[in-house]
Image 1 (cartoon, rainbow, N blue to C red):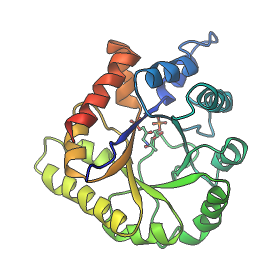
Image 2: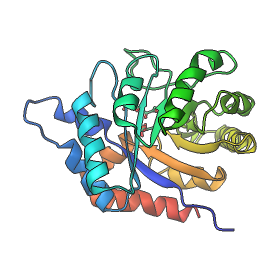
Image 3: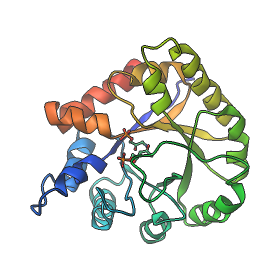
Image 4: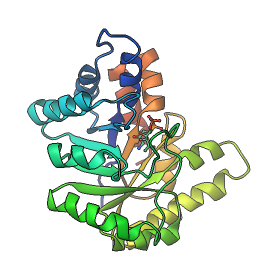
Length: 250
Ligand SMILES: CC(=O)[C@@H](O)[C@H](O)COP(=O)(O)O
Ligand SMILES: NCC(=O)COP(=O)(O)O
């Protein structure tokens, strides 16, 4: 049985970060989205952090409108902490997917996932609200196989495996062991009835090996390395390169 291809969702945080360093409106976040989608990306991800260091509320609204109008088959994934500002965007814009991330307001970058059973009861009503609005819920998780049943029990549709640990292990003596943790976590999630996404520090150098080792990943959301590559190659060529990395894993 042929498995669905892993979707590429381009995270545009770092386009907004550069844009915010002048009052000129360039580089354009919507134009970056259009060029990546035109080149074949299946979705767009943003993480509108409360301090607005990069993606700002107007970016989220403009992208939601752009995708609805011009790219109805593309998915819009909004990431954030549901106890901070994420739910306002979910209620207003009803994206295809909300990715719950347990970041503090001033966090340098995302660096850990939810834990179960600790986080279950406070997450449950917000997950129920998202699903009642027709929004798929993905929980940002460390590769902990033992946590996946808890993620399912609280009502999540998907988990997003936090892949910084995988990226950092590449080229070390722990690489095989660490990759095995991700494979086990993905299998445990799928056995529990969850679908699996992945993201953080994925790149052209590490993506194919990850997808070959970790079965059935539905979506990878990639931003930092993608935008760094796009500074050299352009959005369209970079999108094609990442789609090739995904295809090479099939
Ligand atoms: C949740 C995650 O790992 C990333 O999607 C996150 O958006 C990165 O945030 P920064 O781009 O602010 O580092
Ligand atoms: N969820 C991961 C994401 O959207 C982008 O993470 P990164 O590629 O910027 O590390």
